[in-house]
Length: 564
Image (cartoon, rainbow, N blue to C red; front, side):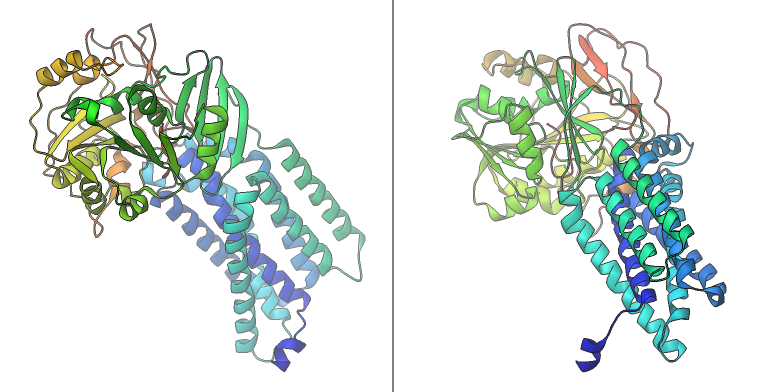
């Protein structure tokens, strides 16, 4: 205890601690910077971890070779160089991401160049600090010196990871966090030169500090063609934006469109696929007896609001991100009340903890084009089936192609749902063969609905919405022999979804005119696809305007927070 209380950190100690804080803080921050363009799949995080470890290793190696020249002054210049590159990351990250996304790489490697360009150089520079600090350490012996440096660097990494995750990201935007890390590096570099302050390091410190402030003040440079930004924030889970383009207000989560509302006609479905959420009302025995409905994922709350408005039901919504729900209240006319209850909770955890039985459960939880893995697995599907009433219906919004390349995840999800439920059906939301929203509907009771029977129910039931086009969009049972049932032990969702990356993703948008879609690639790494010829008359999608997200936005849903 006496030794600990008497310990006074030296300048090299401070340098190695700060390098640990900033290196791990930048690694956590990299996920938030990269995700809007490339998603947050295991491949994205694999790229981030690989680049950071490689860059640090190279820095350690080169620093060790040059350690005999180590000095506080040299470490000061290294920290200033790192801070200067952080300013580049803050200012040019969006443009660099767009440029890197155009490289013709396989989907799983698409994010690697962007991570390398943005975070390789500063991490490499930080790698020099540990061997330099070990060389300058006052500890006796190589083992004691290296152990001391490893401990301080690791403690700094723990502080950087924890502070960035639990404090900085929920409170500050990405630009301000980058500015903070840069200023910490500049301050440390400045302190290393004291008390003998020389003109060059002092002038460089001031110059880099000014560069950081200017970069953060200007914000990332990139052309935003989406419209007027009404609201923007960094939540604990994602970047949230509300953008108006004419009369259409759109919710973006991590750069991906999740919900839209017509400001002139708020009750109108802007995206066609949200109309399919009403198909369960054709499959229950009596829609007038439906009392309780659960949506897992809220987004802009298009589906929950529509159910509350059209039916005499109580609607529960399990939405993980409280900022998403608040944005829906502030900008998308969501009102909680006697018939609408928002639960800020993970969907699977909510189902596990509740004793409520629901007549309809709608699963609509995505982050860009990726669904949270724990909401794809057989255990979750069996839990949802158990929480349904005897004639209850479950609907899952799946993003994939209906057949061929890009259909693996849809077919695996269909197989998993079919394993848990008595009967399963699926519906395409676009006439195109590209990646789209596919609605998989399952009943707890054994059923054998035909299109004709559902069409007759649509005519006989006063649902307040005509679902004839949706009924006609049914798909045949898919081939599932070559895909697995997704279980807790084996759920290769990332590899199943990999084939969708690089394909055009089409969202049908309701409208009066029929046009060809303008699909964009489902994730960065490929350029926007060309429009296809117009659909055949009478097909699902006729009379609709097909649109697709911008190249940086690829899925209509949120990571636990969801798409509608």
